[in-house]
Length: 251
Image (spheres, rainbow, N blue to C red):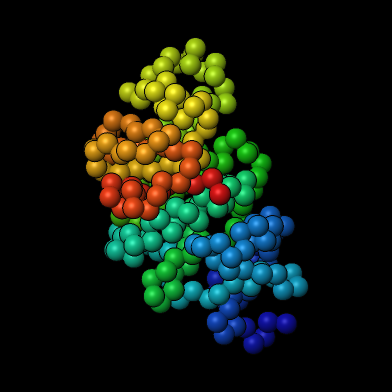
C-alpha cells in the first residue's frame, strides 16, 4: 500500500510515512480521540483519520528531544520563543480535553516558524486529577530543554501555585493541614480573592506592579516572577500593559 510513500520516522505505533505535503502514521484509539476533540484548535496539528492512519501535514522541522540532539537544542530558543503563548494554549486545550500528553512534548514547525503540538500516540486520560500538573510540568521541561530557562522557571512556579490553589478550592480541609501560607504563598488571600473557586486562568509576569482587575489574585514576585490567577480571561489591553503571559486556560 505504501510503495510510493517515503518512510520518514517511526514511533510507538509504527512507521511514519510521507506523501507530498502529508504524513501518515498508525493511530492508537486515544490518539484518534484526541485529534477528534482538538480538531481546529490553534496550536494543535491538524489531523484526520484515513482508514487506520492518522494524516497530518508534513512539517519540515520537528522540535522534540527525539529529533534534536542535546547540543543543538539551545539554538532553537529563538524559534520557540515567539510561539510561547501558542504552545501554552495548545497544552491547555489538551488539559481541557482531560488528557495527559504522556511523553516529552513534540511540535511540528512550519517554514514560517509556526509550531503545532503533534503526535498524541501516548496520550491518556487515566489520571484526571493529575492532568494539569503533569502537562504543565512537561511544558516547563520542554522550555528548559530548548534553552528558555527563565520561562521554564516561570511555568514551574505558575503550575505549583495554580495546582495548590485549585486543590484548596476543592478540598478546603487542606488549609487545616498546611495553614494559610505554604512555600511563601498566601493561599488564604488567593482563596478569598477568587471567592473560593478554582482558578480558570493562570498567567505570569516579570513586572511587579499592581494589576487593577476584579476577581484576580496576584502573588508577590518570586525569583523575578509574579503569578496572576483569575476566574475569567484578563483583557488583552491589560495583559499587554503588564507583560502577562498566559500559561493555563480552562477552555
